[in-house]
Amino acid sequence: MSAVPELKTQPSSVIDLLNQSLAGAIDLKLQAKQAHWNVKGENFIALHELFDTVSAQADGYADMIAERAVQLGGIAQGTVQTIARDTKLAVYPVDMHDSQRHVKALSTAMSTLADFLRSAIDSSDESGDAVTADLLTEATRGLDKLRWFVESHISA
Image (cartoon, rainbow, N blue to C red; front, side, top):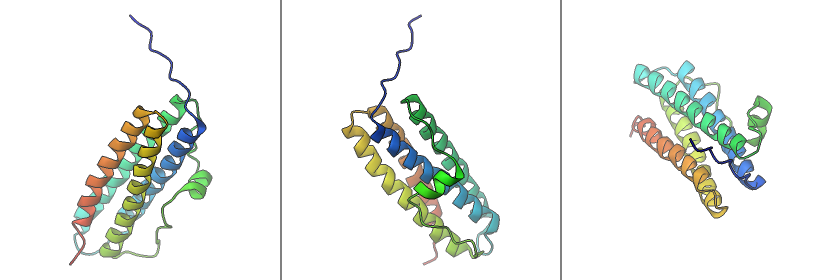
């Protein structure tokens, strides 16, 4: 049985990108939970369940991203204080119940994170870290699909 080769430590810039991505993924998870708990109105049950799915998948992406940062020799920065400081997502409005407002706010958050991840994919690739780029591509692909589901609930 051959030994698993050790991962080469990546530049701190890749680890920093992973931690910024982690902040966004955790923030999205919590924003989706906020929407899940508080949504009312048209398509309630469909949105309630969809927002829970977004939260769960964002949590999965956060876990993959955090573990990759540690594999590369970094420390995953996932505390509430770090997330609040480093997220690129806008503050989620906490004073609403309307389903359409939740759909639009969550869609915006998902778009912001997906756009950040796209730039992080390019940076990871430029740093020669194809594995991190692939991991972030997987997360972006999943976010794009989920955003499509969320946006399908926007009323014309």
